[in-house]
Length: 66
Image (cartoon, one colour):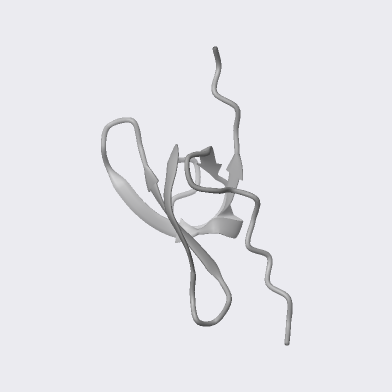
């Protein structure tokens, strides 16, 4: 079985998307799930309330200022 990079973000983290369709967007990680194929997906909620799904490997954890 091939190892899959599932990133380093977890539920509750603040993250920025660095690759894929939503590149450049940031928000809080919600609903971390592992798919049948072994890839992790996350839902990211932005400050304006908008949500989107992306692969966890496309996001990096960032520290909130303050």
